[in-house]
Length: 371
Ligand SMILES: Cc1cc2nc3c(=O)[nH]c(=O)nc-3n(C[C@H](O)[C@H](O)[C@H](O)COP(=O)(O)OP(=O)(O)OC[C@H]3O[C@@H](n4cnc5c(N)ncnc54)[C@H](O)[C@@H]3O)c2cc1C
Image 1 (tube, rainbow, N blue to C red):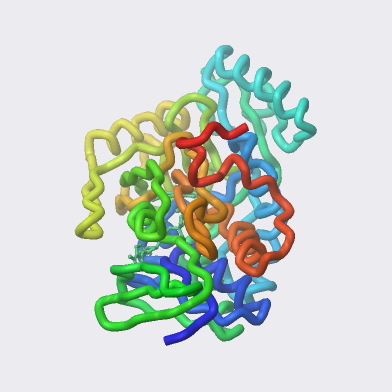
Image 2: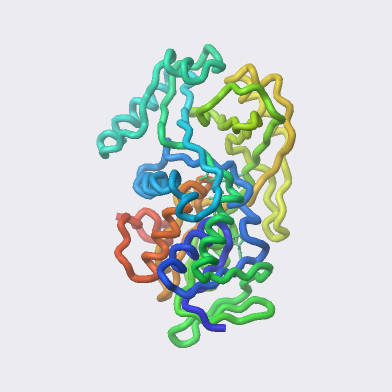
């Protein structure tokens, strides 16, 4: 089967890339071994977060943030996006010190989207916060969206522009045949000019077949959600130095993250929860917000996520093969960047000018010194 572009992976990066390519009239096929949005892109916390980003990611993340508020219109779908401020709470003066230092760095780079707030303002914004919290930092434009809906919104919009999605087909072999790529699943072969690796936690396997080495690892971040509670927090909440992260949805349920990890069984597509760590996470939330002592946990889960050693993604060209492109390794914060990553990948594939410095995201940055 011939097509101009094959994308491996039907997560948000693959679907967004397919959308942006198809919209430009490029013939694109997405191969997904399970089903679209089955993994990280469908089960994440939906945090649309610019606050606290590594400075290398800020330009991309800011550009993504500018897209989220009008994404429903663009994709003709409901992503569930809600603009809410995000507050990272300072638990003590050492945290405030960290914030002042970061403010200097950010202001030095011309970024002013992170505003430090004092204890009084923290309390005004989050009346239920524990008295020991001394302040925090806020990004007013952040928010959340519903991950499964958002990823499917990209898929459907891509399909409306002619993209093809093939589910239940794992890519098993990739090789060069003349100037083209030959991609094989168990039953089918696809020949294409460009290959895009959006294979998430499995992406280093694709990289090796393409000819690139990458120190990608994977893990299973966990989440839990409560039953409905009285409304007590409008902003999304995190902490400067503690593993605290939660958001209260409009229906009253509270989604609790915090980055603790369960057990990943990637080869079998499975995760197992670490209940001890989840209990610590729950205790932590209740320490910051005593009202959470009354919460009942309704459901817990984990997802398989790809991590790079510096927690920055790989976005860009293969260094060892022509017409192969990578977007993976988002290290538990790639959902927010999905809308812009697809645009960047489409620029790369079509040879258009990319408006971002992708140097920090090179696949070979651990082999060669990034200057
Ligand atoms: C619990 C959890 C909470 C998170 N919270 C947030 C958050 O609040 N905010 C945020 O911005 N990010 C968050 N993230 C991170 C975010 O979900 C990911 O960074 C993002 O979804 C990655 O998208 P992806 O398309 O690269 O990967 P995926 O969604 O994993 O998609 C990759 C796809 O490739 C497919 N694939 C792999 N190998 C093959 C093959 N050989 N052939 C065919 N298909 C293949 C897989 O089946 C998979 O569907 C969280 C992640 C998790 C797990």
